[in-house]
Length: 255
Image (cartoon, rainbow, N blue to C red):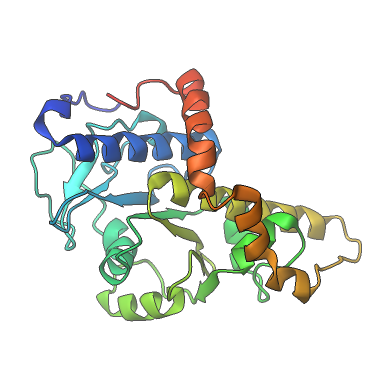
């Protein structure tokens, strides 16, 4: 059972508290959608301000237990920079720190080991253009080959190279990664990434010949997304509704 945690709302800035609440919500939504892997994946978010400080999950706490106050604040080297009774996974921030250091726009980095995501990451062709959900992902997708558990600092430049300026990264034989300017954007990007993988696995399991979407449609899909969302990031559109759903299922994340 998770240890009790003192509420830190009055000890941090309003901007940091907002980041904590949204990140805790992203963790609990990940559990609600069934993408968690016990305690072994991570979502990290930058703390607003001039320092390069980040929030990450306390090691050993289940995702549906995480609260805004229990999140651990660390620096780019994974060292705690504020008092916390919790430790972090020493390997957990390797991937995240590489992306945060290289991408100023990646304020939130989300990594999952979802069953469908890992299944597609093990396929030689990777994600296929089989669904509408896949098209937005394919328009901004990179691939990174598996190098074992994320413990090797020397892997970081290769991971950064493979992500480039993209929003989605498929870690082969490992899982999925998304980046966003907010936890909402990273989470909604993961929703479409995971949905595309689930659809692909189910379509393949049917045994029938698959019909890929034509390349010209893929090429024009980014412009179509802008038109449909009227220039608003999908995260901003759906996040309030997701929080209402979370309040019904796993209340208490904002403690």
